[in-house]
Amino acid sequence: MFLLHAPSVYDFRDRDDILFAYLSDSDSVNVTSVYEMYPIGWFSIKQQLADHDFDCQIVNIASLMLKHPDLDVERLIERLEAPVFGFDLHWMTQCNGAIELAEVVKRIHPESLIVFGGISATYFARELIQYPQVDVVVQGYDTLAPITQLVEAVVRGGRDFSSIPNLLYKGNDRVETTGFSHKPATDYNNVRNDWSYYQNTPVTPLASKLIMTLPNTGCAHDCGWCGGSRFAYRNIMEVGTKTLVQKDNDLIVEELKTMGEAAKHTSIYALQCYSEGKARMHTYLDAVHDLGYRSVFFEQFNLTPHDTLKKMGTSTDSYIMLSPESHDPKISRAAGRGTYTMAEMEEWIPRALDAGVKGVMIWFFIGMPYQDRQSVRDTVTYSEHLIRKFAGQPVLPLICPMVPFLDPGCRFFEEPDKHGYRIHHRTLEEHRQAMVEPLWYRRLNYETKWLSRRGIQDVSYEAIERLVSIKGEHGVLSSVFCEAVLKTIDQTKRLLAEMDHALSLDGRLPATLRDEMRAYNRKILAYSSDQILPIPRPFGGRWFDDVTVPEEMIRELSMTP
Image (cartoon, rainbow, N blue to C red; front, side):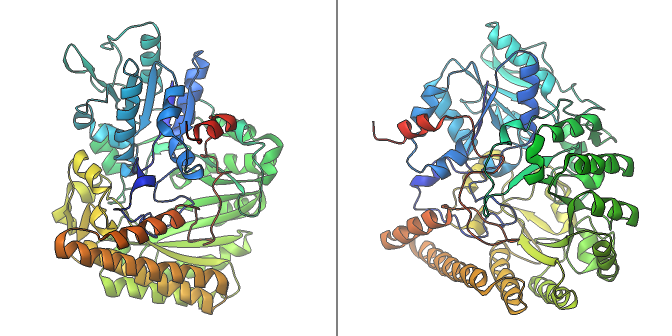
């Protein structure tokens, strides 16, 4: 089986009618608006199939296309021969590229089975299975058993999948369903992920090692915008009241061991650890300490208690990421947070630093209920207050827009009127078409009573432009970094305005403007970056960058045949 991760827009390299604009991916993590990071659950599928004597390989087509602009993808697909090809539709960012790439694979390998899975694939299963290139949709949050049974059946030469749970598939000239009965209540994705492939990846000043750990699925919390929240899991996964399913903690420790001696040069992003109890969290911290990991970034929903802070501080270089979403408690609560006030947070920060935590990052979000333009500006003003108050200390406020989509299945998507939202794209096909809109505000599937789609775009640039300037004024960022970001924002705003004006006149983009858009896209997609450290970083060295396709094959397939 090959698991193929597609770019957000399959033919992004050839497009001069779409602007892959700075901030159209929020710039909150080290990826581009091609969204080249695949779901970490793919490691579990790969290991599960290996445990059953099947060869499963992950090929990151998106990453390869970014790193090797001349790579001939269709010739690469011809080289990838397998009876089953899997595609992720976990979050909606891949809804255009994955469906388009699946069509290419089906054309080249018509006898192979095309399989989709993920949260969004589950939500849109009945629409997704109607695409001609899609043979099977696997529903659920833990699909290890159905996928294994599916591969076993295909390898035996069968196409009758009626005994395999959680499937929609094409058979007997119609769509068949096998129900949705596989819903493990314990031991989520219960295999050990193997990071050993990443041990020898070089560490450079611009490409440090970073892995991720995911100890559970679902969530103990209920943020209204999130497709992984309690409400969303009940809505999408039909799981009743139990929406948090944990992985065996011993397996997480075993995963950490697979980095070997390279652990001392490796950082960890600890996903969803905010849903973990104290005992499991402390066991995890003991393993991080014993194995010598360089640092860990912890997402925290509440203000971490003192004993855990001390444990973090003595285990490794620990960084805490808070996300109150807004400085305004009314907005924070409406977003699903609001578990502490800004005053309480400001009292807590010195205690965290005194306990040995190396830094605190505070994320604010644009696109929340009750949040208007002035409220966003006030959040930036509050961020400056934090920078002044904690001058010289590692306390970093950040702000980003919620792009490109409000998660289908979340509370705000399902109950928009109740929370002040208007939904622009409802179906999978509407989302797929939205991803190729020239202007990123038109890609947004939502707006609020307080901010239009265009307003969200405009205030995002205003807020980040001002916050970057503040960081430069106070020495948080160097003047070189600030000037580069501000220059990019200026160019981006100008291009977006010119595009908007041209499209409003006659619905066309003039050739000269398309030439400039093409040059801009090539520049912006030539590197990755993020707001924490806004410097261009070369592709390669990230855990999700492709390691499957041999370099000699890439060179061969990058030449004109």
